[in-house]
Length: 439
Image 1 (tube, rainbow, N blue to C red):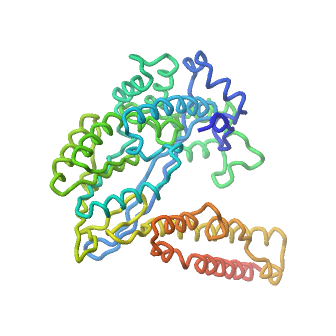
Image 2: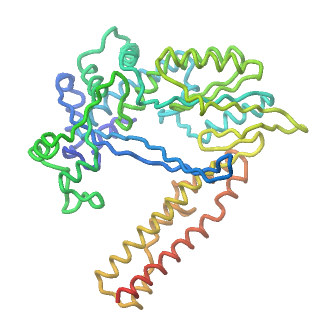
Image 3: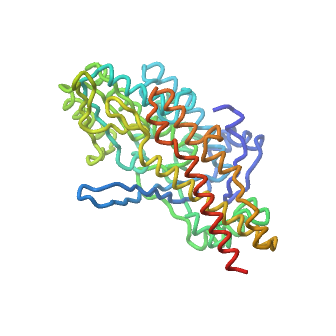
């Protein structure tokens, strides 16, 4: 991360106001100020992801996965970003010295690679190996269960010191004894609209006085009493999770490399590809090592994919899901869940654009004919949800299809333009019908 982006003003609303680059730099690089800094409570929101699949009994099964995200005040975020850059540099040096640069694939923007290349590497390795077993592991509640003592030790080791310097310890303490306020509760207490929180040019959620009376004195601040877990979403969460896993990664890489296998870790998802005769030994080793760092593998999510050769073509007993892609030994496809999320977001965006048009029509007192002649504004829709956009899911899919040399991925998205147009037409008809009924 460049020095400019470290201190670039952040746009979100928090209890404090966004500050400029010079002020952020002056604060974050002043060790004396950092070691006595009073960190503010984070704002916490819960992101819910719906997973829909067919169960074994033939019924549709819907699961909702909740992921708590905490984001820091503007001044706190500047400090976290700066100290994250310090740790990231030291961590990258460790990876280079220990030949682990290719092992850890998540949260390393300087690598210049993305999930497409990481997945392609694994799939190409399987194709070359032909007969092998891919073991996929998932760490249970990863960020929520990181042991504080182990994290503190790893932090000091990365800095090549025995104990953390006072400024680093202050940052460590703020992330292991962190406080938060639920965003929805804060907005309600402060009388801020959750649909339009920036109304009237609002630049911060509240004044210091309002924070004391409506947030602190109202008992909305919660604290983490546990000796494990860090907030997911802070500028430091990613690098700290990687630092925590450093010794584990080194041990598993050595074990898998000794049997001429492949080991990769993307955050809490791990993949080991080995010859069938080494499957049990490697799986047992991973389970033992994960216990050493006081984490737990989700047994229900541990998957074993056995690749063989049938009629001169690779085959697998259970399709491998990895980094958003499916691989059956021959074809590479996008995961259905990823496609479903994309189309769900498309429909939601079209509904929002339609609602915006409807509100504008009413405010302008347009006649039925005038309203019907005014189409939904679709420039942003085209950019985000079609081939006309340069950086979206569709362009990512096209790139993946090209890099995997597999047209099957392009076939999965070939109807996206038709679906977008259909959704827009339907939304325009609904807006028109509402306008007609309102008159």
